[in-house]
Length: 257
Image (cartoon, rainbow, N blue to C red):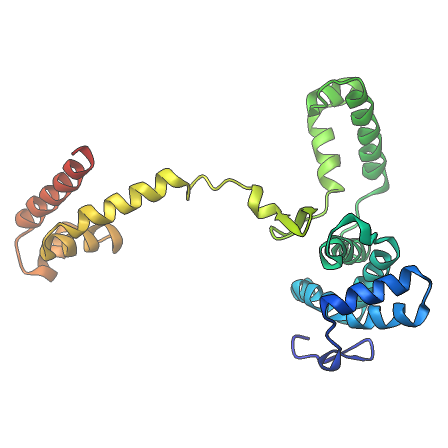
């Protein structure tokens, strides 16, 4: 499917590429009721649909159907786009195109959520809305209390109707600036403190002599015992132990200094 050039009878390699000026001119004509301009605009923006469709190759869905769903999102974007809001059309269209594709994939998914769970989930959403209208925090426990059900039932039902999202899905668009979901996720492992510690550790290891570096590498990277290291390095196990302790003490002291 990755090698496919024709989708839905459209030769994707021959799709036209519109400039920003072309898009602006055609959109103005569309808003004036020009159907020919609308058709030209749709074809000229199919490359945008194609670029988004490629994200879903791994879903094992029919490429033609996914592309058609994306085109529906494109058409909806054209019909609802307001040039006066000061946002690029592509910025406005991407979330809508992705939404149509995900809706198609969700509705066509063989893993169906039972009707009873969906009904429960929709009742939960109504209760949550009611709680929020009273300016109260709609926590899972608060919703469960009002519905007289267990918290785990609320969590399970909401999770069942939630669609999986990509880390690179846009969650906010304004004035051409797009905020992705990945931008809002905190990485506990790769934060500023951990990076500082890694840099300090690298610098401390760099100060060791070559034999100490090799012993630490064999001991803590390859996981070898001191006896195995002594045979490989050609020194006694006692010497390996002494050099290892000495290297660790030097590293420790560099952190304290």
